Amino acid sequence: MALAFDEFGRPFLILKEQEQKSRLRGIDAQKANISAGKAVSRILRTSLGPKGMDKMLQSPDGDVTVTNDGATILEQMDVDNQIAKLMVELSRSQDYEIGDGTTGVVVMAGSLLEQAEKLLERGIHPIRVAEGYEVASRIAVEHLERISQKFEFGPENIEPLVQTCMTTLSSKIVNRCKRDLAEIAVKAVLAVADLERRDVHLDLIKVEGKVGGKLEDTELVYGIVVDKDMSHPQMPKRIEDAKIAILTCPFEPPKPKTKHKVDIDTVEKFQTIRLQEQKYFDDMVQKCKDAGATLVICQWGFDDEANHLLMNRNLPAVRWVGGVELELIAIATGGRIVPRFQELTPEKLGKAGLVREKSFGTTKDRMLYIEQCANSRAVTIFIRGGNKMMIEETKRSIHDALCVARNLIRNNSIVYGGGSAEISCSIAVEAAADRHPGVEQYAIRGFADALDAIPMALAENSGLQPIETLSAVKSQQIKENNPFCGIDCNDVGTNDMREQDVFETLIGKQQQILLATQVVKMILKIDDVIRPSDF
Image 1 (cartoon, helix red, strand yellow):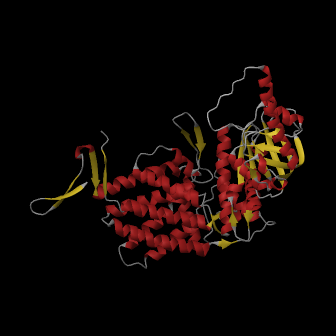
Image 2 (tube, rainbow, N blue to C red):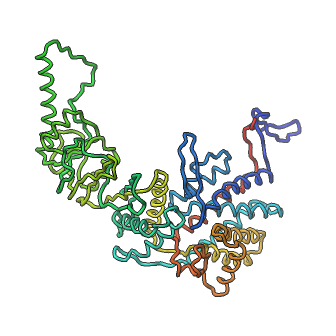
């Protein structure tokens, strides 16, 4: 793009290869952008809440994903439009920061855009709309702070944490055993949490899945589960008080870096080379035995001869263990990863109370459990399920639950779910609009209407009359001055979310409102779109 002037000094734009580009400007550009954002939001609207629908996505290579996690749906969708890509990034940033509420944040942004469109049609300038939204989002965030409640929990009293994780899991496929999964998630987070610093290192929680069994067989292992078995079928399958040597060096004779060639022309020379190789293996195994190791875990493979020698010397071994798993094993057992045999010393060995091999069903699938470790701050959640899709979705659900538990440990304030927080904010923002004299008050009212989109979607997805249900709950909140009334999605018979134990993290809700407002402001400020033509 270049700027030029005609003979009267008037500026005009020269676009490179104009005929290959299309251009939208002014109100048309804004409307096109708003409709793109609304289209993405409409896709996710039906998967909000405990009765939300799932989406089935097929990748180009035929992999099928069934999920109702907003971030996953948008990640897997092939989106071309730049504004739609902003919505994808919006749900991704909510996922990275909070881990939950990825669907709600997009639905929220979509309804803000919808309200903005109405305001633009009335002739209000987009910047005034954006400023009104900014003011309203601050009012909503402060109001959330006021209606939030703190609750105390400790290693003994984990019930509040479990209840919050159950709220998260209730909108997933796995909601029939949400209680068990919520308990597993909370125990896993508390096992790796540093409660003094209020910090949780989620990398220490490994989530492993295996097809077969049923969802109820999912278990929490205080240790590491590795998808490997002993390298020789006759090695012992259970080792107690194991001292583990963790090696990243291969069990084979060293290879010279230079190009080399060995000529063997007699049987004696071959025998000599063979004996030399055997001596190498002998020395390696002996070094492990001398250090006091009773189990060797190696990142590389070793050939049958080394395997046979290890078997004869009664030194169980596991080969081809991945780098990430090695690090977790080292953290859990308190061992050091050894890159050379010469550096193997007794103090570098990891310690575990029990290492056992477990086989599953009638298949030959076996896995290695390393339990009762010296440092129990690395745990594994081991998921079972009927098929691969189910296990993948359970992994995503568990990830959301882990993130919620982590957020609560960082900040133990909660707001009540079921749309009650949004309705309460909507009432507060509506009341605040009268205090603003300018055109912004229209935008602030629009923001209040947009907040109603989430409870409305919840009611719609639960098969209730959306407008009737929402207005009934709203009038109940105003009449009783009770900010805890929400949509009764599960047909329990009460609107009070305290009785239903439906609550969400305060920081998650605040983040939703702030992120959605930021993205909408950004979209409203675009008034000129130049893009390559479709031809």
